[in-house]
Amino acid sequence: MGNKILLIEDEKDLTLIVADTLRGQGYDVITAADGIEGLDKYKSDGADIVVADVMMPKMDGFSMAREIRRLSPTVPLLFLTAKSTIDDVEKGFEIGANDYLKKPFELRELIVRIKSLLRRYGENRTDDIRFAIGAYTFNITTQTLSIGDKETGLSHFEAKILERLAVNIGKTVDATELMIAVWQRDDPSNRNSLHGYIHKLRRVLRHDPKISIINQRGFGYMLVVHN
Image (cartoon, rainbow, N blue to C red; front, top):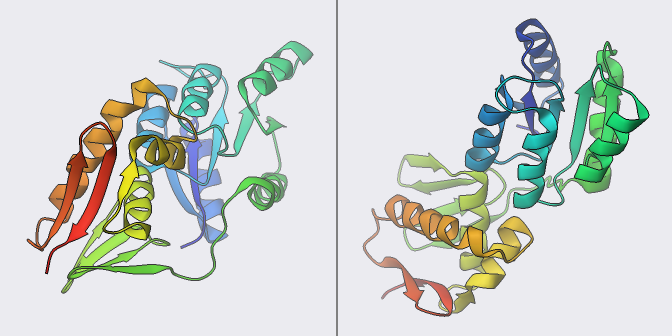
């Protein structure tokens, strides 16, 4: 599966057409119908690029983008909008948009712009990168953990945290370093989220009793595989 695209659009027919077209191009597409759902899916699944409408119910695209930018300042963000005044465009770029595409648009142009943004800002990986963690195999590229014939998918943020811990197995990783690796910033509001993701990783890794993630209080976390 190719890069992950989070498509947030409240027009159902347009969503179906765009999502099907992008999947036909080899992309992994996640959809949401409003800004709140889009933000929730970004928090749980992450994305290599966000394609979002501006005018949406519950939470508009600008408000959603502010929250996404707070979590991940570098993820590419492309707005789809019928609003194309200078003020609207300026507001979007101030929030952190990387590109705009005015409705109605050609699907071919959307694909070209997505490819361009991924080349400039994305993290494209062509080869699977794996770590052995006790009885588990952690595939960083596919964001999966395997043990025996059981495979578990990780969220984008869980995979980022586990990657940093696996690279430093047996060593304490500072909580600040983990937050910067995941959210590109050390923000006190993210500390509870970090602890929550660590708890989820412990549950996923529970089938090998030799594995533990130790909380070094006041410092960070350490991934350990006991003999």
